[in-house]
Image: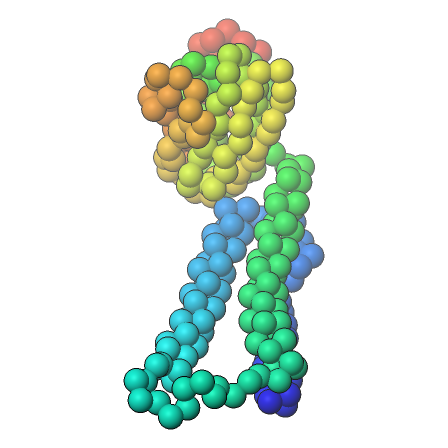
Length: 243
Ligand SMILES: [Cu+2]
């Protein structure tokens, strides 16, 4: 029995290390956090599926193996587990389950920490949220409402606050959501890879028109974005600096 426990333990540690090998804990700066979150989510799904199948299989086996039989001559004389085996039956499943839990949690922690480091090469846009709109201000003073145009391939950081109540700027495609609130500056960043459109929505119930608080992130090729920004600067009569 003890030999079997030892083998199980070794297998758990080995598979844990095999997992950790293709997932370095101290990952260098993340190029695209959205890909990191997707990877981690995939990992969670695989792990809970594998562990779920193992636990379900053991349970099904026990249900059949130790089912009650009416005229069972062994009734009342079940073999007792030794103290070591009893402890092992508790400790090993807990160890397998918790070690995987901690592994996933540690990776989430590492990814979150890296994600909070915003790349130095970024465009910063101020965001003021209010009932019921998203109001963006570019570095050159250009303002936009509900439509955030950004250049492809460059990190975009939003510095956010709110003029009335709690809102939450959510861009599902980029896997980012952060609260904006009065009297406080919060931030988020994302990396728009290629041109396209992405939904922005409010992730915190903020009033009766909350569900209408939708906008767009419009990712443009860099030259097209610069042309748009210059054109808007001229139209709005603000300084024509580049972002
Ligand atoms: Cu809102």
